[in-house]
Image (cartoon, rainbow, N blue to C red):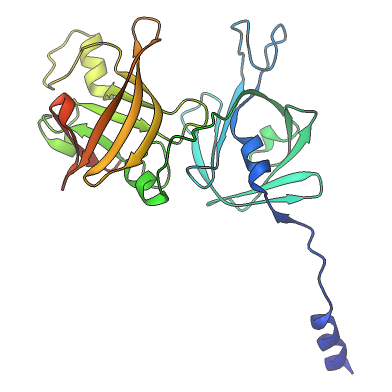
Length: 274
């Protein structure tokens, strides 16, 4: 009799309490959300006050799912979303290397309250969407392309180091390119200095790394696609000192055995692990 009952229960239909998150729901989550502790400012800190605040960004379309809580601490950083679903009125995000799912409860048209999290300090906090996700329709890159290029996408987070730097990937002073393709609101290419190079410049010590200093070194990514030799980006330069938009141009990025080359700049970059 016990075996018959067990078989019966196995055959009965199971009512699912959760369903995979629909693309439209994921798109509405994309963007920048903030919780602000400043009593005299709104959640986004639009008056310049963002006191003991927490910044949350979410991206799904290009990364497949990546979120980041930033409270200003050294441990802040992105996490991969391995599964996303809707359970009743809550959105459930399962994070890599995290046993506790992140449960978010929509509040009004632009709010999310953390119902459950592995970080107890976040539970009960309500975040407001300060910037919605940019369309990024012009960025046509596969997951393989994103894994190779996107310096802000887990799990690899590569860094494209100026090939002129002495020591290559083991150099301490160097400039590098940051392809911030995992940014849901403002995907950019940025030319940046390593910590050691930045410290040497600030302290006016000897700088050993070749570097480019022509302008701000920031370009908004308007579009991107694959070519026979690598990729083509459509970018708009941001002009210093205020980052006003300059000319929009096409930038060819060639793949090489060691990383990438940008013929228009006469530069090559090594793809280095973080």
